[in-house]
Length: 193
Length: 156
Image (cartoon, rainbow over all chains, first blue to last red; front, side):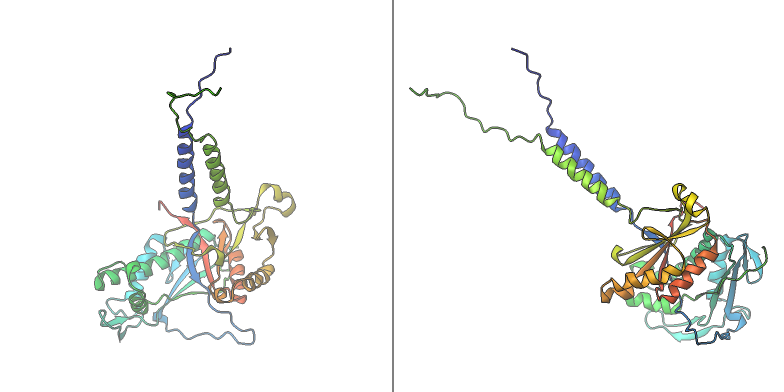
């Protein structure tokens, strides 16, 4: 009679495959779609004429990106790393400078109280047809980051919590204080082919 | 005459679990194939740009994607190496976007229609002219909630 080969103990195989299964369940569901959320302005009806809205020059911050991905803020060549601080200074206008947006006083309700804020400021982003998408997104990212930092600082000052941890109506209060006003112009061809 | 066994111990036969690993493996493969499944097969190749202020896209059923990039190697002969737009599984022109959005929106539940988000998955090398055209089409189709797909920036 042939000698029987002893069976391999395979009872732990199930455990191993269970581990694998759980591993894949955890890792694959982590892959979520992320992105920079923006809102487009509503379309202009075709019969309506495009009128130049009269924005006081001091309320306007112009950010231009050319076809070589260079950045011009308020007429000056700027590095992307300085943009965030410039935007924050512009939106805050701590010293009430004449070339910075006009300050308005308003009551924002408890606990913010009466605050000065730049109600009418607008940040206008203009890009060239040949601007690289990455450069454009960098600028958008810095603008959103500047607002997020302002809101977060405000939340920590008055609510002692991060902006994301606040209740919805508390977030609304801060949003009113720092309204996100980013306007995008139609793309034009500025210099460079 | 029947043989009476007395002193033999009667044990419960061990449950045969040898097929358990196979079942689990089947489950494993099922999940592996389902969860990592892409929304479409890419006909354009793209590398999304990097950013830091990212938000997650909630509710995948409300998100529609527009892919922008250069055609992959197998389509390059036919379509060239210029930047192209892909909607669902096919190449599209920018004039098709409006119709696509309206069709997709009408297939959604009525209360969800206003929540539709369009995610633009574009290559970071794309020229803004293309993106601006897409944005104009989306505006015209009243798809105003958009998201620029990006990956988390790790270094500056």
